[in-house]
Amino acid sequence: MNVERRTVLKGLALSSLAGIAMGSSGLSMANSVLGARPQPALPTLALVSHEVAESVFLQGVNASPAGQQVKVQRTDLSLGFILGFEQRLRSGQPQRIIGLVDDASAALIVDLARSAGARVQWLGQHRATPLASQHRLLSAEAASGCAPQLGLSLNACGSGFSLTEQRMHGLQAPLQVSAAARNSVGSDQWAATLGYTLAALGTTSDGRAPLIAHRPSPLTGNFVSFSIEA
Image (cartoon, rainbow, N blue to C red; front, side, top):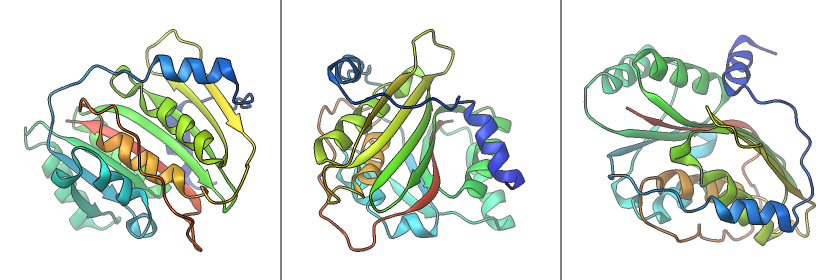
């Protein structure tokens, strides 16, 4: 395991909890926390790594109520990107930064954000295969609706998944839900739902992410998602 991956895993601070079956208790808990309080809309930047830029994650972002105002930037580990991102963080402009990137980029982005005093609202570690996905999530109160929305969407489309969420600075028990795959049609739905819900944070929308048609080459591999408020 490389240094970058260990840094992200340490930052997520999630225990290795096995998901329980997606049943009525899990769904009830998910529905009960979907109504997050709306916040003033902020300019939003979506950061994506190379693989994600070609995926349905951005389709979900664009379908959100704030989608047309979200700027998209590809990440890399170059000095130019690092200096530009740090300058943006320290500009004093209120903003949100969301994204889905590779492990190394996530470690860099989160470290720069914390050094600049930005608030990390959400961190997620995702592992996706053509048949299922696994999600380990850490969220603040402002992002409390994202994990339940992701679980409900994946359960509805029939995709196999397991999901655990732990709250930052909260006393709530971790949300733990999972379901066996009923089909392979929704194998890419997790990325679309994640893009939609992260982009919709702070809006009054109660809509759902668009259902994504089956793709011959779904997004697979290991990724980290985040929502940062500066």
